[in-house]
Image 1 (cartoon, one colour):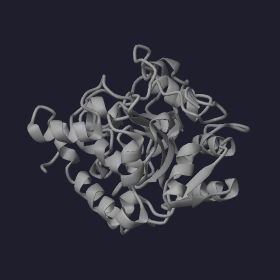
Image 2 (image 1 turned 180 degrees about the vertical axis):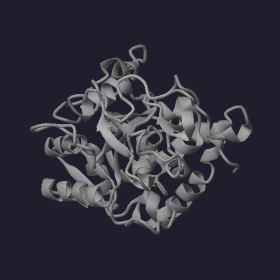
Image 3 (image 1 turned 30 degrees about the horizontal axis):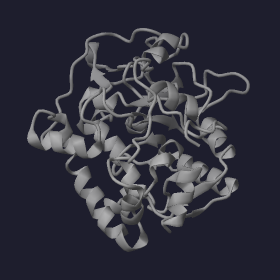
Length: 348
C-alpha cells in the first residue's frame, strides 16, 4: 500500500488559535467556507441507482447474507487506498463503487460529532456535539439500533465491541428493523448507546452515503429519511479509513461540528506520536522547531491525535460556531434535506 508522506508546514499556529492552543474567537468565516451554495438540493432518482425498489430491498443486508456483506466490507476497506490514485483503473473503479468519483458529483458525506470535548475554556451551560446527537434522537419518530457494527464485524476488531452498532432514525430505522439486522430502540436505549460510545472514546459520525441505499435496502423515496448515526473506531470504520487513504476532495465531504484539535506549542515535545496515528484528514504537520501544528481548515476534530499525545498538549476545543442540529449540517454542507431534528424532509 505504501507509506503516506507527511507534509512539512513551517507556519506557526494562525487564525483564531494561539500558541497555547487557546481559542481567541469562533471562526464563522471558516464555517461558511464549508458550505456548498452552488450544489443543487439532493433529489432521489426516480429509480434510485437505476434499479427498481424491489431489487435492493431484496438483496440488502439480512441475517442470512450478513457474513457475505462483512467479507465485502473487509475487502473494500483494503482497497480504499486506490481512491488516492483517481487516474488509474483501480482508483476509478473504487471511487465509482463508492459513488464519489469527484468533488462535484454526489451528496455523500458526514459530520463528526466528537462525544468528548474540552470544556475548560467554557463557562456556564453550553451546547456540545453530544447534545446535538441526542437532540436528533429525541425528535425521531422511530429508532433502529443495529445488532452489530458491520465495519467492526468485518475487520474482526480487537479494540472496540462489535455490538455497539449504528443507530438509524425514521424510515431508515424501520427498514433495518424490518430486515432483522436491528431492533427498535427506545429513546433511553439510544441515549445509553451514545453514552457508551463516549465512555469508550469513539467518535460519532452522522453519515449519509448514497451507495448505502443498496446496503440497507431503502426505497428510492426514502433516501431523505436515511439518517445514520455511527460510532466509529479508527481501526475499522470504513469512512475514517477512506479519509486516511484518499485525496482532499473526498476528505472535504467529512466536516467538523464546530470542534477541532488545538495544540499547546509549549507542551508539545515534537515526538510526532500524534502523526503516527495517521490523522484521517492529514491535518497534522511538523512545523517550526519540530513542533506539530494543526491545519484548522481540514481538521474535523475526531480526537484520535489527542489520545496519542503523551504530554496532553492536544485538546479538542470549539473553534467555529455550531449549527442548530444534524439537519442543518447536512442541508448546508451536503445539500440534503433530511427528515431529522423535527424537519420532515423534502419527500416525506
